[in-house]
Length: 332
Length: 306
Image 1 (cartoon, one colour):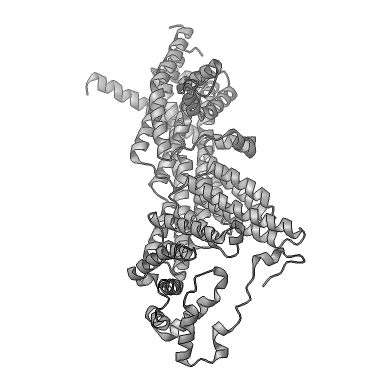
Image 2 (cartoon, helix red, strand yellow; image 1 turned 180 degrees about the vertical axis):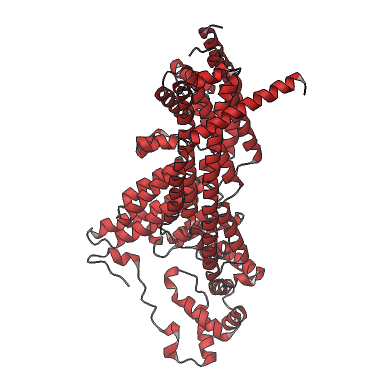
């Protein structure tokens, strides 16, 4: 057989089998994409930003390897406190490996915590600019978590991290209305708790945050009672203290001392835990009946007035806003 | 033994002898030295455990991924380079050494010769991947145990319940050595096998080793876009592509293999599980490509004059 004839047969065979395998491969690709086994197409802007060499490697089926290298580069930027570079690098990393929870968490942590703390203490900048940089870093950290959650809705740690960020007393002012933040945090914890494998503390934190939202006290109280009745593992001091305050909110005429002893088990434990709870003013927990219970407990124990926590000025608490006052940064 | 069975046994026997000789020939080229490099990579990847945010979930979360990412990345690179370069070298080297004339002067069908050569290369890739897989699995297993111990200690100190600790343990073990990781290594082998078969087809009409290697690498890279081009063709110009773009999409989709199908490595590193059904389909697709390109190579090589 002539060479051209053989080559023709091969070309024809390639085209015919190509046409035959096209629908099969298309179905298999769709199946693998649905199962999360095949990455989505890398968009052009990502290809341009990672550079020619890395793009070639990424297109050759090694996206996670490129993401690993970029993570090393981001760590270098972090040590040099080049926050915009850190953010830009993590944008690339999560484009390359959108289903790696670690990258979303780390990207958010760098912006919301490390960059925010840096700007808070950066005395070289005017106070107004520092405050804006601090605020926008925290908001960017939240935005990263939101993007991560939309990519990995079943990753409970992302929901929990979102809750932690939204209710953090050092960050909450960056989000505007604190009550709206607490409500958003409660919703994050609730979503985390619905996911299989989520730790039980997610529901406790949902309770703690919901209790701080005006108008949602009844809902929070129902959840607190449910958790308290469910298991002694939930009987953390904070849960007992918040539950006490909400019970007193519902029934202000109740015997505060009796309720406190009933919840905490002993008079000594009640006075100790409620005293500590009373001092957590910056966390904005409800304090209905706490002062009354403490007074009654102190009276019963014969504690001198000078030693009563409720008679002492609230502890000096560092307020992040102080850092933005004119002059050098202040620390506690 | 009846006549057809005897003939078949002879075919297989001849192919295996050529495969065995090819394997020995490639081993003598000292290709296994790269395993030392891989060993360094697998061990070095252990040291990229960077300080991160607090909590037991964060301990070692990066290092296990780093070991898999570096190891599977190195496996992919080594296997593809071995597949292309070793296959591209085979025919020219046999011509240069005049071994080809000695073999073809005997009653050895050219299909047996080509199949034997390809099998020899695939055996080399398989043994190499097996060695790398054993090393990666061992390193990953040891490191997973270390990470688990650290996580459980911190989780216990932080008052995690038994249920929460079990959940954390399951999540960490999913990042360790498991079936999906082995499936990813098998997918790496399948991809290398397909590109080796493609390189062999190119080498049957190519006039130089360099040409074969360059064209094969180009096919490898373009093959990763095949799924996108196929989608563009099947979309029927819905995204506004012109007829030239659609024609090119169709041509590439028809001619080139879809290498993206075998790219489950990224998903496995990200913790996805590969089902046996998907793996069986990938093996089927891989076998189809290897057999088809070998037959095409034979059609061109069958009456080639030397």
